[in-house]
Amino acid sequence: MNHDIKDPSLRAEGLRRIEWADNDMPVLRRIRARFAEEKPLRGLKMSACLHITSETANLARTLKDGGADLVLCASNPLSTQDDVAAALVQDFAIPVFAKKGEDRDTYYRHLQAALDHGPVVTMDDGADLVTAILLERPQLHAKMIGSMEETTTGVIRLKAMERDGALKFPVVAVNDARCKHLFDNRYGTVQSTVDGIIRATSVLLAGRTVVVAGYGWCGRGFASRARGMGAIVVVTEVDPVRALEAAMDGFQVMEMAQAARVGDIFCSLTGDTHVIRLEHFRAMKDGAMVANSGHFNVELDLEALEKAARKKPGVRQYVDQYTFPDGKRVFVLGEGRLINLTAAEGHPASVMDMSFAIQALATEHVAKNRGKLAVKVHPIPEDIDEWVAAIKLEEMGLRIDRLTPEQEKYLSSWKLGT
Ligand SMILES: NC(=O)c1ccc[n+]([C@@H]2O[C@H](COP(=O)([O-])OP(=O)(O)OC[C@H]3O[C@@H](n4cnc5c(N)ncnc54)[C@H](O)[C@@H]3O)[C@@H](O)[C@H]2O)c1
Image 1 (cartoon, rainbow, N blue to C red):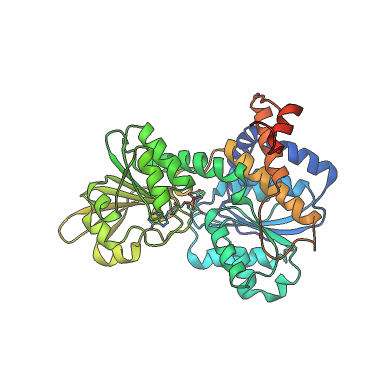
Image 2 (image 1 turned 90 degrees about the vertical axis):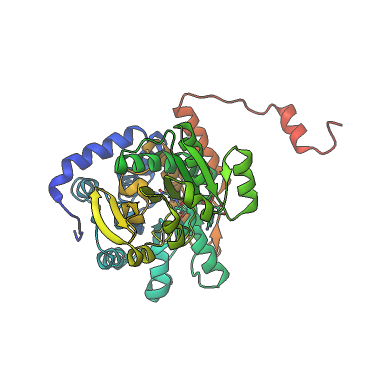
């Protein structure tokens, strides 16, 4: 089996962590049991470009048990858990092309290796496979049945492809499912981002000024958790409605130019580019810490910072120090790559349970509807979203009311009630 991982001897620890994550993924377990019986993905050639974590391993097992012929590569050079990669290869016979800390060339070589598999279905976290297929592998797109996309940034890219007429096969926006972004982005990204910043720095948040760039699903969650830990939280935004929401949620709202002067810890969660630029780094206090948890490492303009300040890498694991000529220091965490996966373990399994249950069911949906889906970015069918929420509630031991026939009638009528 062709693969490229860092260290096969890490297998036992990887397996332990995959099983530990599985304990907290009951919805995905149910799907796996059904998939193992029904084999809805029998013979489906799949390539998935995801963060190689213990939760992803449980998704990969599910797809494989469903009959898929699956290959994995990393969706970020720093997010791979090498022990998990070892266990996937050796215990589950799933080929993996990923090594934590791989350089840019290796990252793209691994992406190509996943495409050499000849997939008819792909799964992305950031649209890298789809982009490579469209730009470099015309022979693959004719055979493609469809693809699934995990994150906001990927969906934005795919919608741009659709708008430009460049998309050649149907794509399902898993990120836009309610059971994905409401929980994964708002609670999962956030808890693991706080975890990543703390693991990287061991900093006390209480009493510190934390600047959050972006008040979307991830930013809102991060702002509220940082406040809960005693930080004074400042929000920067470009969307007036979101900025207003932040203000009414009780956060200080200001431009980055002003926030840069008051912040102690910065975290960018926008999906945008160069949100924190050289003029902002220059305005920061000595000792300011700067992280990104948005999908790509472009949110911080590190190229400009590197030209203007002397870099001392690794003053602590995951921390690089930049010193300006006047002696002022700025600390950049995790090389500006998503800090929750670089310095921590990514989202907790309980939340990935829902995201990956949706991925698995979206794959089944795409396979079942082969040739029937239009070439565009599709939302997740509502029944999938609702099934995942209902099963998660059941597994949490929570029961909710059902509409009575009278209520159903009332809610569907425009004549009753006045
Ligand atoms: N770290 C992770 O594990 C993880 C998990 C989920 C999503 N993400 C990524 O996080 C990013 C944000 O995702 P989201 O779901 O919150 O998106 P979102 O679209 O809900 O929110 C992004 C917000 O950033 C704001 N924004 C854009 N440019 C800005 C700028 N220059 N300054 C200030 N604010 C700006 C937008 O107005 C928007 O309100 C995306 O890149 C997404 O892919 C990362």
